[in-house]
Image 1 (cartoon, rainbow, N blue to C red):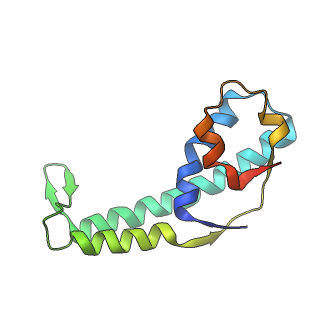
Image 2: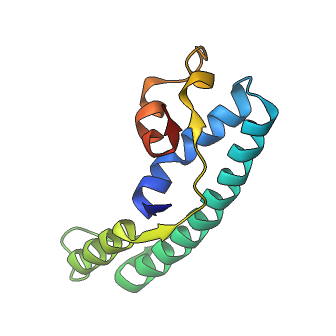
Length: 121
């Protein structure tokens, strides 16, 4: 399945919440765990590239790196970071059946929208 890094990042919290807080059948829990591992792997790579972009275009202030909107590198950082977020990657095609999520009262509505790509109706 093809998905953008942005979509993957936006679904990270929802997947972890569902795995840790919902009573799901074992096989589905296993599939979600595999998906979480894959999401975390891509998230770590994204984080590493984001950090290197910040180091490239930002300035160190104390123990943080900041990119001021008025700085020379700000627009370049935004452009490169948006390109990173829009990058399409290939992940396993794991679908979570909507039927098993319907009666899970703990799930926030926004989690459904961030996982639309992973929910099978």
